[in-house]
Picture (cartoon, rainbow, N blue to C red):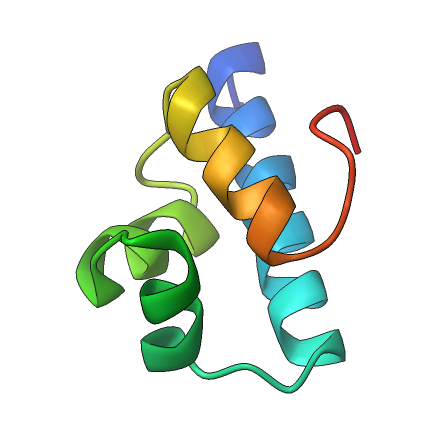
Length: 69
């Protein structure tokens, strides 16, 4: 059974991956736009990491969505 915390990580990861693909961005391109490392972005998309508020803001701005999307 998936815990609520892990489910939240997975949902965020799916959203980031969806938006990255929708905009045709590679990990490297998103990394350059956010200042986050490729490996950190990969871990977010795989649901292994959950970024803090400032990192979520960087992702939202780079992916051109609101923070709470």
